[in-house]
Amino acid sequence: MRFKIKIDASPKYPVINLQDSVTGCEAEIYSFGALLNKFTINVNGQTVNAVDGFSSVDDVIENITNGFKSAKLAPFPCRMNVGEYVFLEKKYKIEKHYIPPHAIHGIIYDNAFEILATHADEHHASAGLKLNYKGTDKGYPFSFELLVNWKLEVDNKLTVKSTVFHHNPHAIPYADGWHPYFTVGSSIDESNLQFGSDTMLEFDDTLLPTGNNIHDARFVDGTSMNGIFLDNCFELKGENPKCILSNDTLRLIIQPDAAYPYLQIYTPPHRNSIAIENLSGAPDCFNNGIGLTLLQPEKHYSFSTSYTLKTK
Image (cartoon, rainbow, N blue to C red; front, top):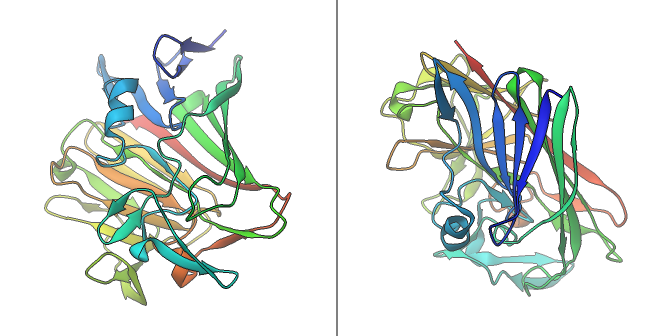
């Protein structure tokens, strides 16, 4: 059988490995956070990991808030203005992590997911995980269930689909995203970045949207990342708004569905990788409403993106 699954149950939280025995492509998924820790491919006899991940489960447990590498962003992504918002005429304040003065990156990034099911055959390997959030943060007392499915297919394609639903008596505010750091085997200064947007959200000096947009077409046809520093959000356009990170040997293609119309890009100071974050809503969407989704009771909402690795 071409595709295989291995589960390492020795760490505190199990680690899932999806494998393509023909190409050697592999994806390592931590049940802690349901996050992608490795996405590897063979390049000229060498194994290249396209994900800037963690050394172990203990490492992610201890250091997930140090950069939020690969973190699941929900029920809000990026920054929320001083961690506060008003919903149904009531004011809420998030209790979770802050980068002063704002709350950041939601409240479930350090939650362990249950492995629901795995499957492998000649066409793909997949793993389904589940989190039952019980409204424990006073700033977000609305329970919901989140299903995350990772699927590795032929042509080194890895797809992640998140499905959320809830049983509250009324609609609840929600936005979804991921925070992976990618590399194509070299410094991002030696990489090229291309994506389908000529519109960047204007930020204030605390990285919150002002409500204005800035024309920025640098990345439409692709440009070198040499000397470019970003911590910005772009509005994706077109029917297939893919994002491509590449160098002379490797190309990573990121293809979100329509549920992820925003792309946050962050270049860390070390320049060894770049955060390319698919988002359903803009930063501070609980306050500015940009991309905010009101989840209706008992209705399923899905958000999907894929990552494909190709050698040149």
